Image (tube, rainbow, N blue to C red; front, side, top):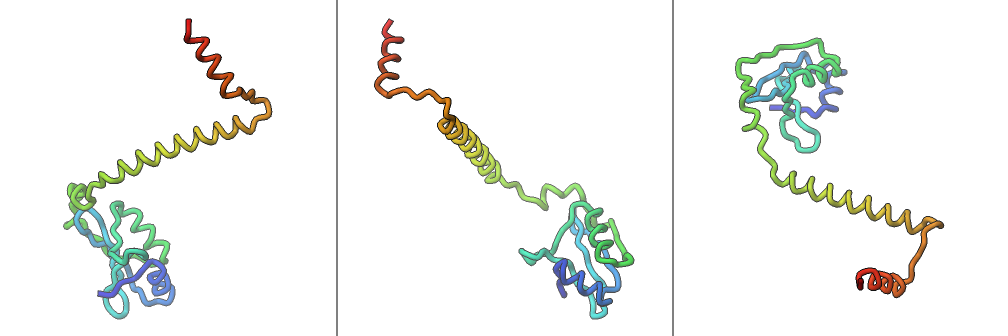
Amino acid sequence: MKTFTLSEARSAAQSGGVLNANLKPTGSSFAIEFETRNGVAVLIASVSKEVRHFANPIKAFEIIRDLGLPGGRFSVTDWRPNEREFDRPARPDRALAMREAHEAADIKRTLEARIKEADDPNTVWHDHDQMFDELEARYAD
């Protein structure tokens, strides 16, 4: 089966090579198939080169409209929205990555605040020895 990226589909549609577009259900999502003068082609993702799936059919209709195609067919007989959790595997590694990213952002904010404080000309600086002498005097009582 022939495949089109979005830019290839746009070029083919503008040149008149695409007759119409069909929304084909695949599990809980939809794929776009193009009827061309030479057969059928399916829309793929530009980076992964895998069939591009749409959980929301409205987004697929927007792409078809943006390509300037007059329409096509769609069917929901094989659409199974209850299988969405099977189509999209869980990503426990993302929770860890997000937690680490939030911690790094907190550290960065703290560091930037300390740098800003150090650059402030009104900041009062204490000598190291003097500060420890004051702390020892305070806690000696």
